[in-house]
Image 1: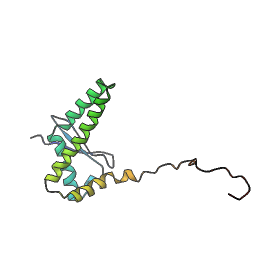
Image 2 (image 1 turned 135 degrees about the vertical axis):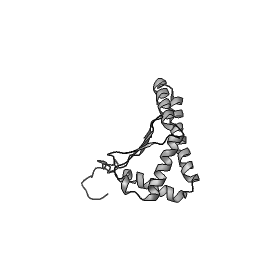
Image 3 (image 1 turned 135 degrees about the horizontal axis):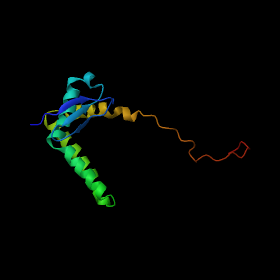
Image 4 (image 1 turned 90 degrees about the horizontal axis):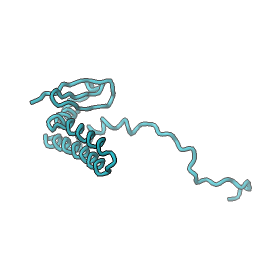
Length: 137
């Protein structure tokens, strides 16, 4: 019954949902160039978060984690809540008729640039031995 506001941010990849009374979905700066299917899949997933009141549950989990920061079981429960929250939203998208392979492709379109991030080379592997200077191994 609560139609979320659609907002567009400056980030190239961030998609997020927040709010309970006036929920909002933040789309990345390039969202207007998405294909119709990609847009549908992303919005279905984010609408699922709104319908499930996931933002409120996330705030509650963060509060409890801060309150019980010393308890590793609370950290594990909060992490597991996040995993299950995403799985439930993925299930809603898949139950709407989206093929799993197509959905996976849309997820990779959002996440893929993170895999291209440059990583610094290691200075050394620690497996080389100093040369004896004789040239014979």
